Length: 431
Image 1 (spheres, rainbow, N blue to C red):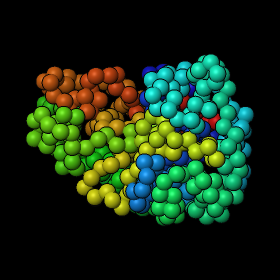
Image 2: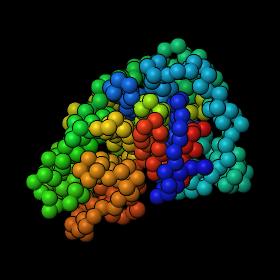
Image 3: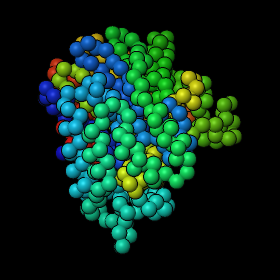
Image 4: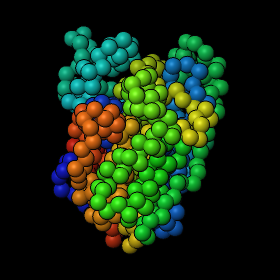
């Protein structure tokens, strides 16, 4: 069973790591079945030392071709080396079984395939997986990927953060252009560990991922509104947050579609790059929390599924080295909040330009209003009435569609609470 949006909090007691959420949205399908072709950023918090670290599995250099450089396996190996408990080779059996025996097509995946029919029908690899002689497979049909199962068998033999040469050769055999450049860029993948962005307020500490994620925007906006709130009690948190984020987004070169830096009509200056497709939140009763945000960059990524590997390559073609320190190119910002009484919370969201706003709302509700986590997640935006023509409202997810609530877990007195896991998520005890 899954915890439902707006439903009761699921509580789990465990002395082991408990994977509690992997969000799969019809708009951004990047399930465990495909995610090996994407990238991720993560925050790990150690409940005993109360220290946090960030690991980015994002290519250093931009991809020389329209297919993104896959970094997930390399990043997961690095995370396992730092924090894993079980032998690496023993972790693959469930994923290999899923890939070889297949899973059942659900409503969300079926709807995404229909919505993105132009991309999926033009891809031989995706057609092979999801279509038969009658057309698109129906809900409940089995989808298997034997080639991916074979690749995962190879991946379980990894001895360092580089992909095994056998796997690289399989992948390169399917690349038609700039093969050697792709190989060179792939060989330069080195998942990078770093210190998180830390923010200390009212005995609470926020840890968030740094550039090229939007953790800097998140922490700076929370700090700015926190300071202003003391002198502007008549203004709501949301109103202050909207004004603060408008300024911060302009500084990093991000504006709503159809506007320029002065707000007038014009050419869009920056895309909402890398809306996150999946989030993995893992917690144990000691207060250890791992939050990972993964992406294929857009629904079904590049659309290119490597025939020899079964890996769907992303269209995240940016490289961390080409991203200026002031530019946000990766909208994910997985975060951990440590409370004054040692309660610890992991927080993430789907991604896109609205993500820093929605996460900041939750954090400010916790810090300034001292509401509990379920209330912070569920609270609506109070009395926000800027002009209807203000394009920033849609950019922050306040107009045009139902806002997507963040997802969160909380460890309190050795109890693990799953809060606001969408209905299409995995079971709170993991796969």
